[in-house]
Image 1 (cartoon, rainbow, N blue to C red):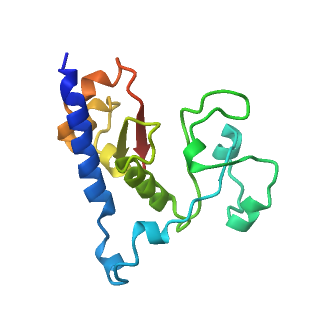
Image 2: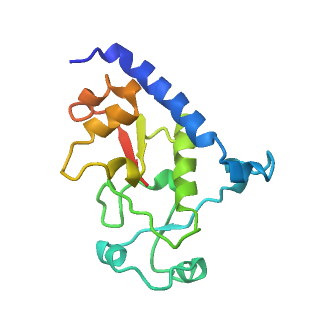
Image 3: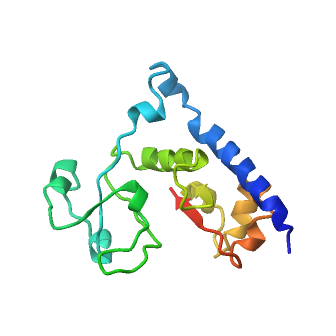
Length: 173
């Protein structure tokens, strides 16, 4: 069993690493100057609760205007994203979908940076992956291998993921 004394150090190192990675602007964004930062361009999304059927067969009209005109679904804030649902069940999975350019990746980037700066205290650890990170294997695998491969500083934390009460958010983009 790994020494749990190193757990906070590994997570702090992970926060610094993610913050540096996710706060870095791509070259195409740098041309707009320092005011083109994540905080300056991010707008909180409109998040609505949906059934599995609605997710699997989304409306052909996913425009923001259309979404805002549907009063029957509850609007959820980012801070309450993993609270209980309308049926009283604890939300464990969230699927974010929308058309190209609606800000899905920007929202994920913002969530990771917020966690790094202590603004998502619900989670003790956030582990983001791109689908590209996970597409290298053609057989079912445990997340342990990609975590230790991409985030080597978390190798002492990985054995605790299934056996501890550590509150972890996995983000698959």
